[in-house]
Image (cartoon, rainbow, N blue to C red; front, side):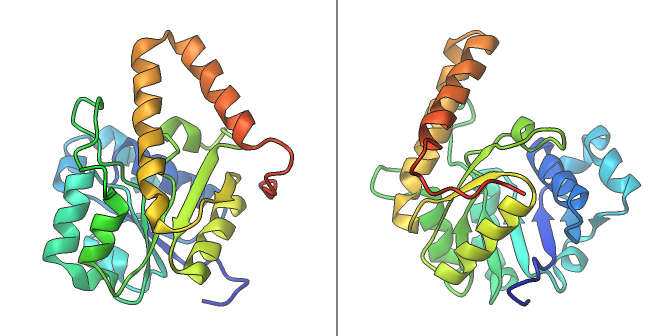
Amino acid sequence: MTDDDLGSVCVLGAGRFGTALALRLMDHAVSTRVATRRDDAETPGLLAPLLERRAVRPTLEALDGADIVVLALPFPAAVNLAEKFPGFAEGRIVVDATNPLTEEGDGIVLPPDTSGAVEIARRIPYARLVKAFSTCTAEDLASDATGALNLVAADDEAAKQTVLRLSRHIGLAALDAGVLAHCGVLEGMALLREEIRRRNPAAAAEAAARRLTGALLAPGTGVEHPC
């Protein structure tokens, strides 16, 4: 993959989030394949737009030749994959888009001295792990949405810059959030977002999210405007 080439992407998981991300990538002419899980096959309505574009492949075929692999899975499934089949990640950029939240979305399942990204990185040490898209929702990634905030963190600087470039190419407001040690904060933002949604009417929650995004993107942040 050259500096000017965004490469090919394999999205692992075709739930609401994975489907929205894959469609957005394809809408911006990024070569994309999607590997589904058994649980995804139980919701065929979500797969319909991916099937129409012939993007769905068996897992090994979807992974074959992919430059970037996105873990668009529930956190326990991502950890299980990394533990049982670590070879899928060797030499690739692996994007952790998970958040280690409880099933109810009211807490984080890990102790405060670690993060989901760090736990996944420990299990696939030969991957170039990047935390990204975890601050986005499926609604943020819908093809007609623009400027959603995507905070990107990694220890591998070159891999992080590749994912930042890809994120900006598909119209997201991508910011460099530093190293993987910061990922506990990023995952905490997902918990806060869920708490705001639960405790506030939809309109108020949306307004609060926009104010938070505006504060993070205030003049002086150095963000590149999305293409």
